[in-house]
Image 1: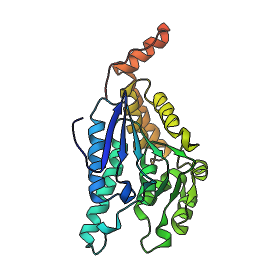
Image 2 (image 1 turned 30 degrees about the vertical axis):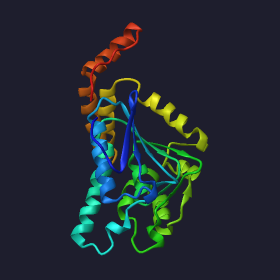
Image 3 (image 1 turned 135 degrees about the horizontal axis):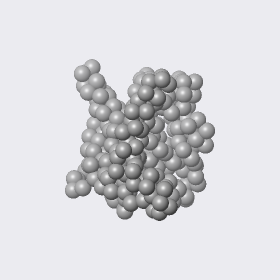
Image 4 (image 1 turned 90 degrees about the horizontal axis):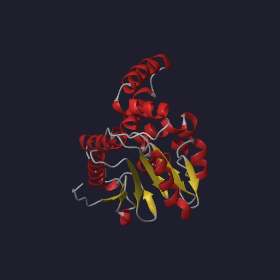
Length: 260
């Protein structure tokens, strides 16, 4: 990866790429420029040989959500363009083949909370909080609610959105917004440990699995099974699947070669 970004930082350590929101002086707000950089970085990492992605942030706030200066005095077409860009960026997280884990050390609010909810996995420090604050103001969190509701369910999502109140990290874990909570001093190691386990095995298999999960999760059960049967049947005859089967039968370590 040779691209240069102004609002995010990309670092690669072994099999894992870390994309860091790097505008702490702006509370890592998702301005139009930040979202463009973040989408481009995700696409670059997605096309790379990285096997996993960590989404992190600099400074005292993970992300304060949309940059209100982008909306002040804007026309309908301008605001639509902004929210479509945000949706495209969020969808890119789920479209790239690698598992993406949010590393949340502090407040993730509004579209920042949506960003966490859009990631495949999330680990939070016990110092993190989460909110959809539009319910306290004049602009309801319509688009953040799409992702958050798919993590926490209807009643809890509406409690977040209607009250605008923040929840702590432990509550976020109990509600399903994050996978686990650890002491702040242990956040780096907890994310690294999860990623070590996430990237083992066949990268191609995981890419198919991630794509398949998001394709079927909102289908009704008969349609989901129809889709999954066809996907798993096709997956079973790939080189990596056959290598995994042979390795199991021959009681040896598999050697995977396919890339997503």
